[in-house]
Image (cartoon, rainbow, N blue to C red; front, side, top):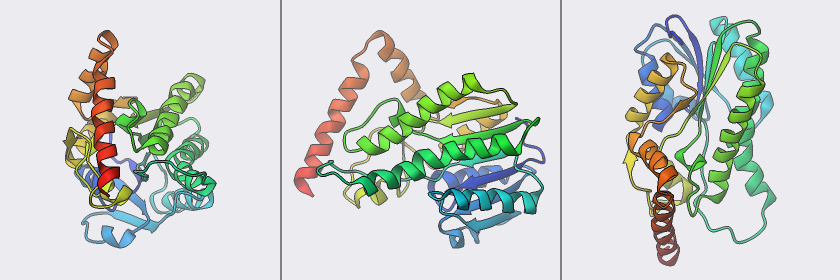
Length: 256
């Protein structure tokens, strides 16, 4: 999709991948509406960026975010659903609210956004870009719930694309571990970061290239993509990787 004069909404833009994407987008002639839980962090960014506090776990807030974005910009051509979080844990007891919280933010919110963008852009080209994860393809020890939300997004997008009867593009991003505060937020400073890791700027550049090429799947790490391809023919690469991360997980449990 050509980015010239596009109106873009992005969530989770105060730090990490979201902030890096926001900075890349500002290199283009676009208008941006940033919905974020911590809008004060966005005030330091220069350029034409509108901001609004938005807890995406509530559909009414997403309705209001899109309504206000249209009011400010006149349209929403691209919605980048980047907001999300992880738990790093060993599941030990039943906790419905714990499950509900992560699914509302990581899965239900992006899916609802797809529905809203379809309704808003009848007869028009549009794009919804969703931050999934490499864990959508390879579940990781300690991230059972998080991995499941991303795998659910992957499955939804795969089926939904076959159902589509409009001009929309649904694009999923599959970043590997990223050098941000993401993992510390998941379980504290001692949380082990999976190997390999990349910078949010690397992910952001891949996202912009993906948008420009209307890619349905964006893999910022060529190494991870290569691992998946090789694993199809030698199906031991990803299981060995998961085993290594399992050992790191149990070591973390023992020492925490």
